[in-house]
Image (cartoon, rainbow, N blue to C red; front, side, top):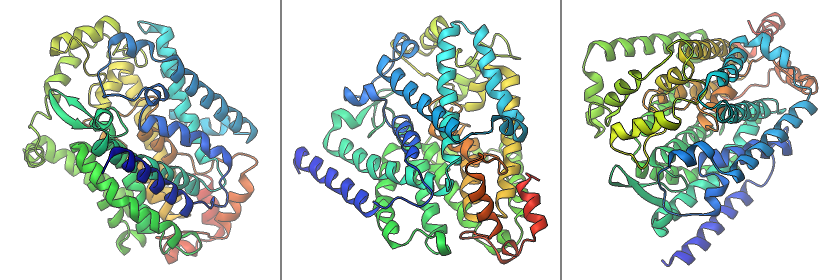
Length: 479
C-alpha cells in the first residue's frame, strides 16, 4: 500500500474511533483537555519535534540543557491554564498538606535543591515542569468524575498514538525507526523504543482494566459503544508493544494485567485488607528471592537480555562512584548536566550523545536529591497507599486501577527512571495517591453524594455496599 493511502486510512480510522466515542462522559469538564494535551506531548514527542518530524536521534548536552523555546512556551501555557482552573475550583492546598505532607515536602525540597545545582536557573525550569506534572494530576483528580476523566484522556491517546505508531513504523520508517547502540529499533510516535514501550504500558493497562472491570459494572459500565473502540485498539497496542522490544514495559504490562485479574477473585473482594497485605508480602518475598538466588538472571536471560541488564549494572556502579553529596544530591535534575554529563558520555564511549538517566529511577533520584529526596518520595507513596486502601470501600474498580498504576511505577523504576518532570507514569502515580478526603469546595457535594449512595463499580462486594454511615465517615476522613 502506498504511504499516502496508508496515511489517509489511518486518519479515517482515528476519526472513526473518535466518532464512536464522541459522547463526553457526565462529570467531565472541558478542562480535561489541558492534561490530555500535556500527556500527548509527554507520551510521544514534544511540540517542536512534531513540527520537524525526522529520524529519532541523540541529544547533545547543549540541546538537553537549553531545550526548545517552543516546547518551553507550550508547557508553560498548559501549566498556567491548569493553575487557573485549580484556582477556579478553589483547590485546598492546605488540605493537600494535611493529607500528604510528605508529598508537599518532596516538591518543596526539590525546589530548594535548585539553589545548590550547577545551574540553578536550568534546575528551576525543570522543577517548574515537575510542578506542572502535579497540576495535571490534580486537574484530573478534581474533576467531578475523576475515573471518567482519566478514561476520557487515555482512550483518546490510545485512539491517536497507537494507529500513528503503526503508520510511522510500517510506512514512514524515516520517522518511526531509529538506531540504538548500533542496532535498529522501532520508535513509532516516540523518539526511543523504551518510550514507545512505556506508552503502550499505561495505555494497555487502562484498556485491560476497562474491559475487565467496566463492561459489567452497573451504572458505570462502559457499554458496547466504548467497548468496540477499545477492542479495536487492543491488538494494535499489543503489536506496538511487541515491536518496541522494551523488556521492562513488556514484563511490567504482563504483571499489571495479571495483578488486575487476581483482584477480581472473591478472595480479595471479600476482604479489601488482604490486597495491600498480600501485595506487600509478595513484594518482600520477591526482594528476598532476588537478593539470595539467581532467579533474576534466569528471568532476564529468558527475556532475551543480558544478566547485567544490558550494561545497566556497570553504569549504576560508575554513577554511584560520582556522587558528591549523598545526603542532598546534586540539585533537582542537575546530575545530568554540563561537564559531568560529558564526562559520563566519554567514559561510556558516547561522546556525541548518550544516556540522560541512570536507567533506574531510585538511583537517578538519589543522584539528584540524595537520601533526603528519596526518603520523602517513599513516605509520600506510602501515605498515598493508605488513601488507595480507603478507596477500595467506595469504588473497588477505581481503586484497583489506581493501585496498579502506583505499583507499576515502583516496578518500572528498577530499570528505567520515571520520577521525572513531564513523565506520564509519574503523573498517573500522583493521580493514584490523591488523598481520598481531598475535595475542592465546588466539587465536594457531588463526591459526598456518590459515596453516601454507595455508587460503586465492578468489583465492589456486597459487604462494601452495606457499609454503615459510621464507617463511610471514617473512610472519608482518611482513616
